[in-house]
Length: 445
Image (tube, rainbow, N blue to C red; front, side, top):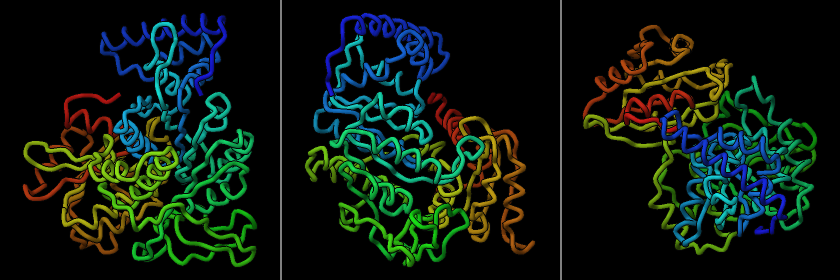
């Protein structure tokens, strides 16, 4: 934290920063994009140690947020809490969470000489690159949100990722604070193995148990001995209250009592995000009054339970990029009285090219409630087929509309949405950006 940089490193860093800022200016001036990745890529070619040299200058330390779901919401909430206390915070708010994106975010806060003037750096990091960035970043706090199957064509199974995390995190300094999800067996086990100081977050609210373990479940076996876990109940996917009847492994005790913390964002998954951010903020010395007030007035990040008003009608965008996340957004939709939903399925690189995950989603619950379902996206017919197979009876009262053109699909969905109801849109990541561009007339990235 705040280490001095050698003179020769300062020269190389200053040159790399100057070039990166020039690239940023050109890209944005020509409206070629938000320049959230390219500047970092170029700067790293000039100075390969740029991530380390920049992170060393963060005065109060780097906070790394990793996991499959919830990174952006958790990071934005924690960032907002710290900014309300007057801290200067650097955050990769565009969602660019690979190495070049992290570098670009840090570069944004530097001057032309490469001096970084910020109190905290909150960096949301893709789960697969965590082992590569821990050493140069030397984070003060690591938030481990969850591990679900996500883009299997790129990443593989969750146990492989957790083993990599455990191996690398255990080599960090003893003063590093690790905050894993107690309700995730894999991460609860990770925290129990680490030599560093570990705090846990999780739920203790049996009233919110699911009726049954959903299809999209990843880790119901003991990470220590491999035996099937006994669950008192699950909150979502494999997150819940568990013990192993064979070796005695059990859920770690959360630092905060979840029932004492309210949330303003919809969905139980956002309760986890709220608790993760609150646990980290308390560890950083922020008073509870500020944390609670921020939570109660917080607005969702773009596309994450974001509410818009379009042509006088309410629209809610619920990012749905993997089985667990989509099951949770479906739960939000089915708990409402609104009867029009737009699902947009893409298979581009940010989404993962393998869309077979939609067959692990409990779309039956969406179909059972009836109403109008509009589908669109690059893989519109895959989604339409999944919904048709979700119909238990041919006479199910579902109005399924297939529309290849996204702009027309949005218009059709809005037409079918009564003035007193909300249109729920469930898009994958790249689809979410396209939806927002259509709805708001501007791009995010």
